[in-house]
Length: 117
Length: 112
Image (spheres, rainbow over the protein chains, first blue to last red):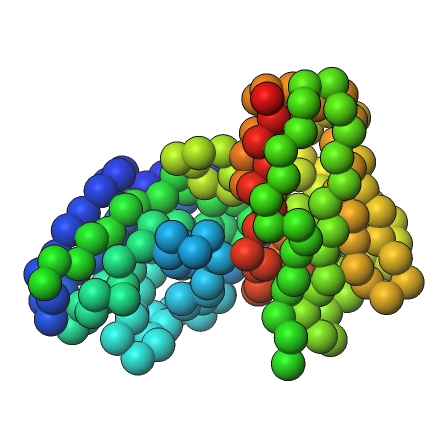
């Protein structure tokens, strides 16, 4: 069984500033992935960034980067140069291998990020 | 390249009725997963289909069933609707053996 915890229900950041969203997870799997998804008011879940658990190097995608601490089971998302379009719900998810080539995503409850002009 | 498409976008049903939601996966994907997202919550895994069979199932009652067609599209059926079934239903597609999932825009189901 996997659990994902996001301890910050809401956060705000000034435009052009940097913000970090926190996530901790628990899993008994050795083969798993971690993701951050963004869900704007349009409802569609958009993949922001992914991290393979077997890779030590932190993933980076343009203004988005993660701090992956495997031993601490921590997976935070840093957004640099925040833009108004970054306003959305952000979900941390763990993708655990559940057998027969199948992965299943477990999501946290989300962090509502507001970027203030 | 079409992404994941779901239909309908909104639906209102009466308690006790049955509903069918539809999903077409992203081109090249062969696996479809369904998630239920209650208001203010993260998505919860319902089940996953691959090769027209249910491969994994979350903690949902048998009132929730599904189907996958030879073209990889999928349906989610919910029988005997309860008020608590009101939620956003998300479909996600992926390639078998990979964890990365792409989501549709969801179907907002309201049970009255």
